[in-house]
Amino acid sequence: MQVETKATTPIDGQKPGTSGLRKKTRVFMEPGYLENFVQSVFDAIGGGAGKTFVIGGDGRFFNAAAIQTILKMAAANGAAGAVVGRGGILSTPAASHLIRLNKTDGGFILSASHNPGGIDEDFGLKFNAENGGPAPEALTDRMFAATQSMTRYFTCEAPDIDLGTTGETTLGDMKVTVVDPVTDYQSLMETLFDFDAIRALFASGFTMRFDAMHAVTGPYATAILENTLGAPKGTVVNGTPLEDFGKGHPDPNPIWAKELMDLMMGENAPDLGAASDGDGDRNMIVGRGAYVTPSDSLAILAANATHAPAYKGGLAGIARSMPTSAAADRVAAALGIKAYETPTGWKFFGNLLDAGRVTICGEESAGTGSDHVREKDGLWAVLLWLNILAARKASVAEILTDHWATHGRDYYSRHDFEGIETAKAEALISALRAALPSLAGQTFGDLTVARADEFSYDDPVDGSVSRNQGVRIYFDGGARAVFRLSGTGTTGATLRLYLEQYAAPDADHSQDPQEALAPVITAAQTLCQMDNFIGRSTPDVIT
Ligand code: VG1
Ligand code: CO
Image: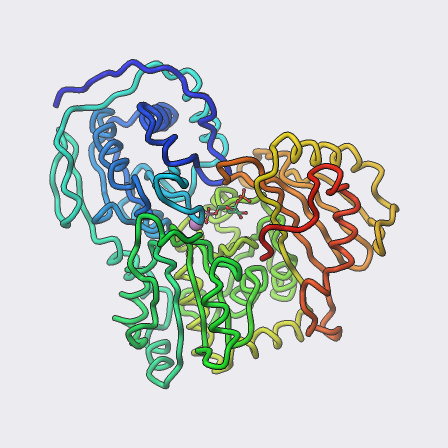
């Protein structure tokens, strides 16, 4: 194999965000764009020589071509091996598992997750480290630094690898192993959950709809739910991954999974509705007439985890991202275990999981997971729910109301304001930051600020500090508003306003969340002078 050294120059803006580098697909397809970034990964990890990597993605447009480029570059950088999902397909949690199972030196995950796909939509690339988790900030900082001084990349002339069939082949001196994307992941799930109990649940007539949203979980859900657990054919819908996700937003929330929501709120609702996102790491859970917010789902999974074989010994601790509601903290307190609050993004859970400090983690953005991999895991959450439903012999709605009666309800909602001019969004955050010292004691609408700060995270495992992770406003009476800018978008800025209000176990839990949150919505919008800064007060997406 002849290694070719290609001269190149640095490309602006190749800074990984909350979850890897995400850009418009056409940007990724520009000559050298993908190559520069991939080379920066190799440079940041001390080169590829002798190393092995997992490579796969969510199947969106440009997935297959990008994998061929990465394979050639890996071989040219001296890699010893690559493990690739058949057809270039790997869900994010399955990729995380393969990195750990095969003890590789990391992996390249090609996905822009919940962002739409297609030549005019989004593409993304993320590097995960040898623990199977997203590169921590110290590593993404090194990657970004490498992109800024990039002068050459290494590749080679070679025919494309046939990814259509499993088996081993070589690319120069590099061994390429094409694996079934589902098999190892399914085996892992079988070690965690009581498949017999779930099988018996389906056999008893339990009904479910799983919406794969034309994204990566289709093959996984079909193999596990229908072919193994005996859910009737047709339980999984939109189960064939498409390059453009059928032109949808593969984001499992009540807005983008509206069809599923309508079904679940209607007369013919099955017992359980679930959905996952583009790359299979998010989940939505909805019972008959009962939507479970991701924050509540995290808390309920943690409170009931011992029903599943993998967690029967109890949990070491629970971690949630800062904007996620305090519901999980209440469960941790009740269980007498530690609760951790981390910045947004799964990369911050890695150290806690590696150190054995936490067993279950979650985010308000529909991500839950455990120490079985180092990513959030959509199907895992669905299977844990199924295991709990099978064990408790109760409906989703019953489990939800029972949970609130025990721990209280954290009314919760996120309001997203999308496509804002970046300068305006940043001005709003800067003004908030400047106002922080004087906010306590001031009243906005009906609510008085108890305390306010900007979240900074001191990682208790490696001592690293991550600043400016969102503005938190706590009001008297148990309400909280959080402001932060999204780090996964590809155009303009998205302002996320996270809202919550606690209602004690004996309080009214039957309100519509938007009504229960009305005072904190008003207070938050007034306090940040939303209208002045961005000229808007109606969110584009409410979850
Ligand atoms: C969003 C979510 C965050 C999640 C991230 C990646 O980030 O808020 O909780 O970890 O997406 O999820 P941001 O910066 O846009 O708020 V995924 O499913 O894209 O890997
Ligand atoms: Co995702």
